[in-house]
Length: 91
Image (tube, rainbow, N blue to C red; front, side, top):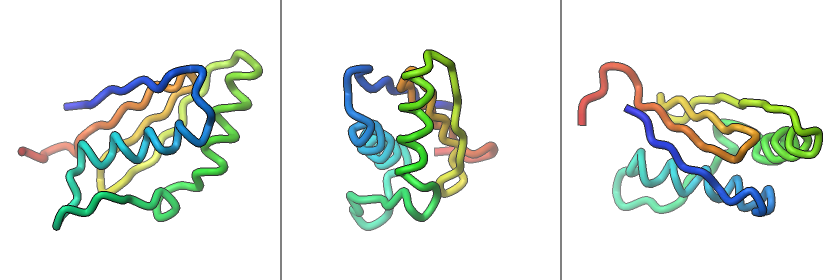
């Protein structure tokens, strides 16, 4: 199963990172009502912003993948965020 979210292309890169965190919190539903998630534990948010911004300015497509708590997260240069549940997980 995957969750797909697209962030407004006019958004700033910091909104991209906020969007990634918001979508992750919705999908992963952290234990004990936790409402924050630090991407720094999984990926460098500044580098993610730089890669996506550089790709957009050069009009080239890029896809950055990383895992967060066994979920595969894909961020594309069109500001699409895809989150895939780990295989074998049943909710």
